[in-house]
Image (cartoon, rainbow, N blue to C red):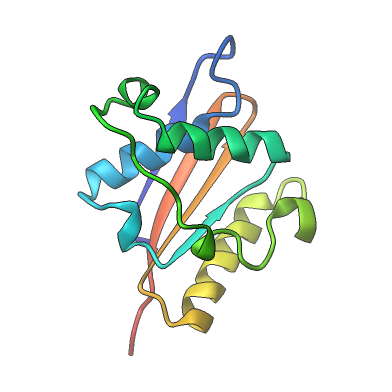
Length: 137
């Protein structure tokens, strides 16, 4: 684990956008760009939640809400939830964090990647993002 971030947003108008806030803050803190990531995994509470977060990260208009002048960027779909997300694999309530963490770590190993990003929303207006680095012997 290189770094992680937890965020809290407004229940009124930012419900389930926690991953966008957390990913933005984590990448800024690590001075990284989306293009440097080999594996990206987002928890899918439901399809609209994931699409909203992807749109927020790619939006110059939303960027100031994330504390940025420009968008974080477009997520490369060829790196995103390749083994299926929570909607297809299953949402093991109470163990989603463990599921997404192990999926990211296993994908890094299988795909010989270096950096993996995982993100999730929780309890309505909370967000989490974590940066993993594959250990090489």
